[in-house]
Image 1 (tube, rainbow over the protein chains, first blue to last red):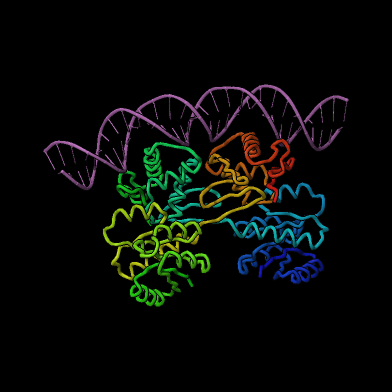
Image 2 (image 1 turned 60 degrees about the vertical axis):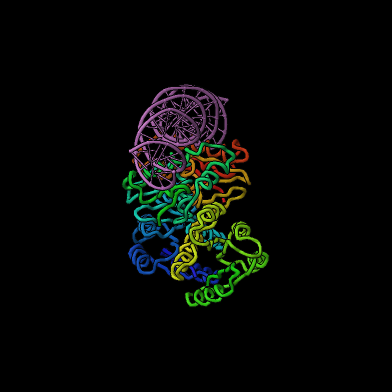
Length: 222
Length: 222
DNA sequence: AGAAAATGTGACAATTCTGTCATTCGCTTT
DNA sequence: AAAGCGAATGACAGAATTGTCACATTTTCT
């Protein structure tokens, strides 16, 4: 069951929301001020925080920044028509915002939407010192970002999805080039392998990542 | 528990393997020939097929092709030193191969390796008629592939990972450009939005996918 | 309506990507 | 050792990407 943290100092609203949200299948915690909110974010690791920006004790923006830093998504509760807050809230990294007064159903729909999109799509493939964030399409070697061209990325992903398997030249050419109906020279693959090795290997002259399997093709070492 | 399909006509070997593999925590089915194998692939949907290429009834390559077509990974069992079979088997899409006679431990290690790499990393994000294969880094609109440049892809992925959220221009510039320490003109983002719309929208003049939020930024419609 | 601000557009130069050669290198086999 | 083969390499031209500008259009505000 998803755990929500409600950061709000209007205790009547807290009571009503807690009741409604529990009927919708959420587990609610609440904090009346910034101090308590920060403590609960650390100890309870909620799945999402609902933050009123007009807190008496502390301010909502600080809570938001803290939550986001800890990877907890945030929905802002704002006084209606508060345009400035909206913009600043989004800049602060709020995942959504909803203007008071709001219909509980609307709030639940926003909560579900944020949970849906923050929970998935954060795949990461790690191979030795190499790391690929498939969600963002980024490749890192250690903490240094490696820039791959679109085709280099596709070729590398194909290797990653078939780690350890010996892939024939024909397979690789089919997968990366022929599938788009192009016909390219056999050597094109060789050149791309070389370029990948230059970007990814410690010592491109002595590849330990993308190995040559003579007479057959290549293999990404596990 | 993983379900393995053993396609092998040496019944003594089937008995020994079934026994050993069950002690290793696998559930085994077996088929003595091509006909039975194809039927079991359909009805039982095994997680992996172990296929002897020297079948008496039918041939292992056909079974392999069928299994791969259904998304079932395959390990070939080959007579030792059978170089041709090895190459052809890999071309047929076998995920690995092992030469007979083999040590049972070696087989189990290969099975685990194939299961590990075939189970994950096949994320797919669907948004209306758009489909992104994050495993391969490919984007489709309907059944037509869309070619995005590396930066276009990164920008689009950022939108996808924050579906529905209003993203400020500053956030987008930070995420795609500034994170690499570059400083680009504000208009660069506008131009990239235009290029994405041209490639992804039905009618780029009337965007329904990437919406402009005037004064703030953009939003990917859910 | 007119002015001001924000966003959209077409065109451009610089850079990078992409595919192909010709050549070299390094195994295998004779 | 020499020949033959597959793979690696450096260099190159054409194509695509990338970032910017000047200008057009749309929206917002007075």
